[in-house]
Length: 123
Image 1: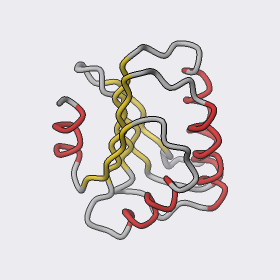
Image 2: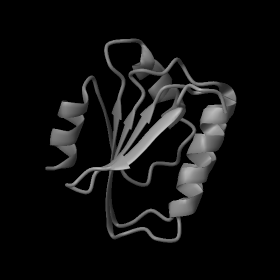
Image 3: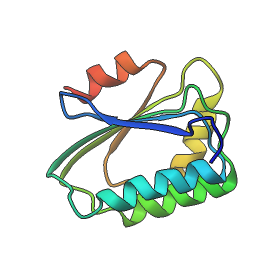
Image 4: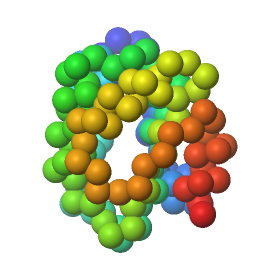
């Protein structure tokens, strides 16, 4: 991996899981895959996830494929919400394309800022 960070992953004090993407190429997809694969065995009954793509370029086809496979294979809990942050760029189009690779098993919404997404995830 180069010096640039592909993904920043952390869990907030309120339990929201945050993925901030700075890249969306093959290595970013592999990094994301490692994080998700490691967490599949310990999924609580309530999950709130924020995916922030506002600082990433449009995803590659490989990234979308990996995201779809991971999502479809993830053991989704009964109470799950996902918020996608796209910023003011055209990333919303790419998020919608990415979501088309998914078989929805949770409630998803797209936002412009993290603050809006977090407010929704906490409701």
